[in-house]
Image (cartoon, rainbow, N blue to C red):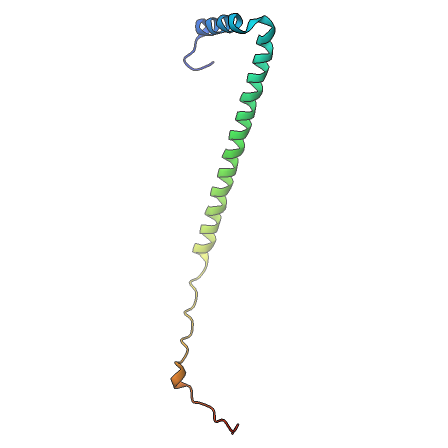
Length: 91
């Protein structure tokens, strides 16, 4: 149930908690502990789902990029000295 903690250990823990906190405070303490554990579980599940979604999106990006054909090499422009200069008179 709780890993390596057995029934005798749980009873001892309960009795100590009853002595320390008293019978009036113990139910309130149990509720707040239960809420805290539920919130922690909810937050950890949300973090896990967010991480899984990011991993899935990254795998999709990688698959799309690997499926794209390689880009054609850009045409090499002629150096400026190879282009004939225009005459200033417009002819």
